[in-house]
Image (tube, rainbow, N blue to C red; front, side, top):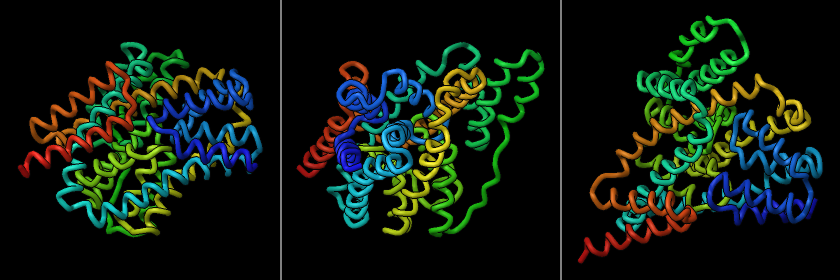
Length: 370
């Protein structure tokens, strides 16, 4: 258990670069170097994480912990992997609350925000190439985009997308997809409410329970509820939270820690973190023994394809909305373009890009003062 704790703490402090990089690091350590897990079993677990909601890289850590030491190993793996990022984000959130409105911090974030938009766009492109496998899935993505623009709820769109593809592939009835199509316009009722710790915890628990796709899909849920419906955050605060999440190692979902601190200080941060990660612990605990069967299920495969495309469509819509808040002048547009070239052409690590964006913002402040 101590060996597991040391290993996952080290992963928590050094796993920069997003979910794909985290999973690659984990594979190298537990399959190639330590041989705790076989290649086939690792791939089976990776497939299973795509069938359940939650952050994929965090859930892979949980799966490995469970395989090595049962439910105790799962707890050790999760807590040790999440805690470093959570603690770093707490420090940054406290600094943001105290100094975020000062000119120095404003200019740093001004440089980081365009980089974040480029990072999300790169993740969207990379995931989209794998998820949009045919014209039917492309059409579904366009339908989800249109429904979202008309005000449809994110959860209903994700579930409808998954059901449409699953049933269309596995049922021969020609009328099935047509009967289910109206589901894509359904919206779960959400009532605006004043902030409370209980409401915040339940919101992040809901998000952690239904969040499919990349951690970046989190933006769709956060903006729809926290910015648009509840008005607990502004667009600027949301993109600042994402920027801080990019500066830290570990799971991107510790963005919830930052937001929880802004809304409810330390109790808000801890409850938000617990709420968004708790479902992953439960899902992995339930599904790990079922991994071999899930891998071979055509029904599960169809549902996954539909949900992934719907999640990417939501991600694209929110990237556009946040981009309008971050790209405010020619300099910020140039930063976003430079970051995109560095990502797409040269595969530069996201940490260096975020630090470079902060430096560019600081330089812009110096030029402005001169």
